[in-house]
Image (cartoon, rainbow, N blue to C red):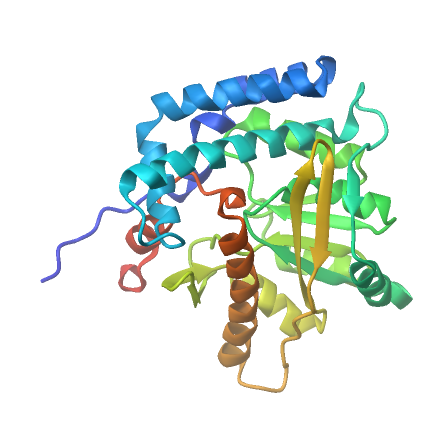
Length: 317
């Protein structure tokens, strides 16, 4: 008989040292009063300390990055972890500064291809909604400022943060940016609420590269068997709304490149499981290309594939 595997608690996704309430609140206070350059300098110093005192997280990042750099040594991959820490810190600071100074008007600057703007306008015509899909890559949170700048209503579907204080701060910033937050597992009718918002002409933002329990579908990602979230493709099939892969990458202090790729439609007439898997695989391929180009922007501070295989292997159900 196979040896039973120990289940891993999925809520520990966000319980890394860079995302606890005390540190996050301190960052919010500092960002609101300090010049950007000083916030960056503190972020650089703080992440270097984190890199020195968080060996388990370093090893987890190294294990994840091995899928992108299979020929590198463990030491080389752990050094890459520092680059990821620093990218995450700068992205967090820039997200918090989208409302600075004194949390007034959004001040993030975006470089957006004309094709992306035209696509959003076309999809939003006649009060239609669409699904904005991305991964834990780049500064997805600053997407609230992007959609406000384009005057397009946005709902973010989010898993509540493990730390309640962090969750409230993130939600408050979204509220100030005019973004509606819909927390999963807080209501029995989440799917119905999403469909209602689509009917109201809102864009719905979802992260697809972490599944939630049985809400999963298998894809190939970075050459490995991986579980992605199934719900976005299911919603696309039921509603007729397309999934639009969108990625936001940092260009410099307070400046971002935001690009949407071709919409992914799910054929409602075809085999349900096959069409849902095909659409999710299309998104996985788009995300993989981004991660290979900028692996430092891929933010999973735990062993990504280990958590999947241990906690959610099919034979566990």
